[in-house]
Image (tube, rainbow, N blue to C red; front, side, top):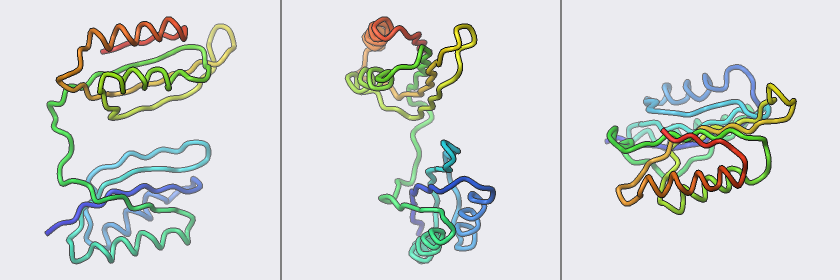
Length: 172
């Protein structure tokens, strides 16, 4: 029987961090299922899901916790389900670009929540504006749209906040 573990890892960025985690997983008979990882602000962070036989679960968890000595904090979460989201889930891609200011993501995520949309992935960054030398805020989100949501209403609400915030919102 297999146990599925979901965990986050975070530590000061340096070469070899992923290898340290992957080695612990492999050495304890685990199988790396999926992950999302990145470097941000000098820190390395990731979330991952692994499978391991139930009789080696505790052994793997203890081995991963020893990474703290090497400066990599591993936080175990409630055990994940055995399956990922169905491939045929209706997903929408949203892109936001505008002059940086506080509250852009609060407003956009508020629209998502009001319509029951679930954020599957979100990436954001601040970049120099090419023309005026200011700072632009860019975000890309992939959201799950439940059958109860009306995309025309979602688009209308996003267009309203885009106008209020003076940002461009593109929905595919």
